[in-house]
Length: 431
Image (cartoon, rainbow, N blue to C red):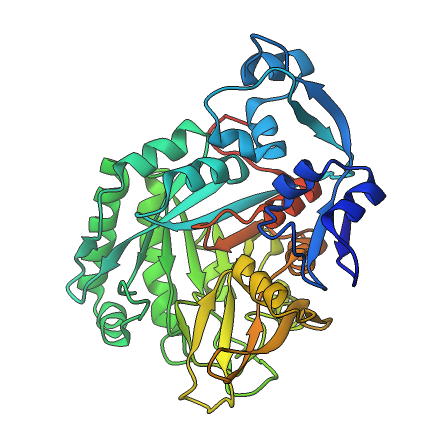
């Protein structure tokens, strides 16, 4: 695999000719939406196919998979655009295998909301081990409120061999966690019992594979209470053969460019759960200092600490899939950044003829631009280099896997990179 960074004067045609890969395949594999006006500094992932097959009349995905000794899920991972199709076309070429040297297997977990575009979900499911559905909110009485009917999503995940996970938190639809509700739950064992039993009923009645509990606002004062709560939850869920994982956001200082985290004793949770996800639930607003969300240098420091106190095979590394746009000058606690897709960030750079810069320590691209009113902005986002550096940490630290927040959009380059680096674990028998 090669990550090509677009240089001045290069076009999709010259890049295609240099690597001897058809233009349409470069566009499809990378999800390029600006092929006629590439931005300087934009990335394009180059992966040479090992085996290409030309579709014949009467072929189906199943027949092609059987003919080449692969699975239909492998074909969909190597040709995700086929998920949008009802039929194959005679004469078109599809990739059976890529030239890769992958040898490790990891688990992948993707978060979705109930309103996800089904075509995006269908395209994403072949790449997932677990699908975590963000749909349930806990109350101060231990009740659980559902925001939508998730039955169809659960069944769809299972049909692709993906294990659906129920997600429980105090987070509202606006992305705000309730510290008050969290305090009530942790300080009252009877409320905890109600919450655990209500969650168990939903998991069993809906057919979830497991539960993902958001452990929020961890402090030195409440960490033992959280551990006791997880001990009780674990005993009940594990007795029913139900997987239990937790997600936590490391406590960070975000007012300065140098991110740091509080070294809490996560080992207190390790013996009770099947996985610990370190993730950042960035929402549609962000008030931190303009910088990369979870930069790689920060992630290395976090993982160095985490693997020193808990087994590495329990850990999922969270990867955020979006970028942010700050209006400058930045005022701590007042300047609000807005979410932006990686594709839209590239379009802004291309249309304004602004070279995309890259921060090596953070492994994240960024650039400055002026809007139509003359206001200066800075955008930090993700590109192929960002995803490659973060995905590589899973193998380097021998982690259980990667957790993607969110998979509401299909990130073609991210999945191409993960697919060429790792085999993806499957829990429900469809590989």
